[in-house]
Length: 205
Length: 205
DNA sequence: CGAGTCGTTGAACGGAATCAATCGTCGTGG
DNA sequence: CCACGACGATTGATTCCGTTCAACGACTCG
Image (cartoon, rainbow over the protein chains, first blue to last red):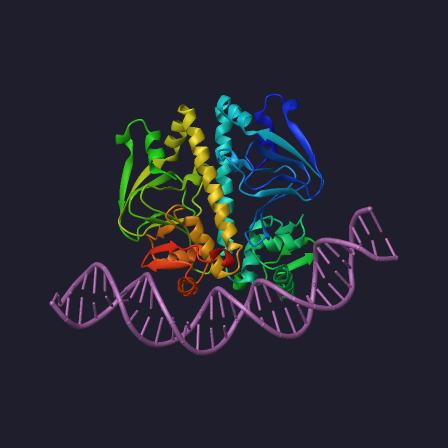
C-alpha cells in the first residue's frame, strides 16, 4: 500500500527507476507480462478491468504514496489495466529485485505479508458493502468507513462520480441520495467535504 | 488457501491441534481476538459478516483442504464470523507458531505471499463481477470463471441459494435466470451439475 | 470565451427484490 | 414404514428503486 515500503527495500535509493506519465497514458494493460510493481510518487493511477462489453470497471485508485500491482509479485501477467489519470510520477520496482530484497531482508517479508493481509481485509469490506442493496444505506456505510472516526469528516480527492463507481452505483443515484441524506440532516456537505451528523443515523442504517 | 501449506510449517505434525465442530458451531466471532489460523480437514466452514441489519452476509466458503483466516495473521481481531455448516474437523495453527515457522523457514514466507496475492486477485475478480448489473450476464461470467476450462462443466457443493448470495442476487433471481439460460441453450443442467454450451453465448455476454 | 467535464435534477423504464405459494427431498422420530 | 417437519428449489405476481436518457448549470482550462 505504501510507496515507502518498496523504496526502502532497495539499498541504494538512487537505484529506483522513476517514470513520468502523461494523463491518459497506460502503465500496463491487462494480460501484459507482470515485470514490475509500482508506486505513485505524485499524481494518480486508476486500476481498471475492461469488461467484455467494452466498458471498463474501476477497481482501485492509487494516489500519492500508494503502491499498486503488489499482488502481481507471483503472477505472470497483470490482471487489470493501469492508467494515469493526470500527470503522474511512478516508481518502478522490478519484481526480481523485490524478490531479492525480500530474501535478503526477512523482516521486510513480514511487512509485505501484513500489507497484503490488510488488502485482503479491505477488499472483503468492499465486497461486504456491495451486499447492501439499498443505495442510501450503502452510502452511509461507506461514509462511516471512510470518515475520520474522531472528526467524523471526510474529504474526497477524486470526482464524486468515481466514488459512485467504487460503490457500484450510477452517479445520479449517488448524487440524489447524498442530497437526500443532507435533507434528512444525516450529513452536511460543502463541496467535496462531508461531515457525518449522528442525527437519527442509526435509524437509517 | 491450502491446509497442507500450514501443516508443513510445523516440524512435528503431531503438534497440530485438531478440533471437531458440530454443525452450527462457531469457530470464532467477529471481534474475537485473532489467535489462530485455521484449516479444514473435512467438512465446511462459512465465513460471514453480520450486517448491522441483523442479516449476515456470506463472504467465503472453506471446504475440504482450505485454510481460512490467513489474513488475520497481522490483525488483532477477526473481521467476520466463522461457522461450521456441517460436522467439521479443523486444524488450528497458533499465529505465534506460524510466525515462528515463517521466520525460521524464509522460503515458506514467499509461498505465504503467493497465497495472499492469489486471494487478492480472487477478491478483485469477485468485486469485478458485482459491477455487472445484469443478473444474467453476471451469472454467465461467474459460470465461465468457475467452470473447468476443458470440460466446461462445474459442480456445486453448496446449496444454490448460497451461490446466489455469493453473486449478490436474490435466490429467486438466480433460479429464474438459470432456467432462462437453459431455455436459451446456453447451459445444460442436471441438479447441481452445470455444463456450458458455446451456443450463442458470446452474444449474451 | 468556448469546450469539456463534473455536478445536479427530472422523467420514464426495466429489472431485480420481495412476498407468497407449491413441490421435492431428506432426515427424524414415533 | 410412514408422518411430519425443515429446508432447498421453483414459479407467479407485484412493488420498488436504481438505471438510463435527457437536459442544464457550474466550473476549469486552454
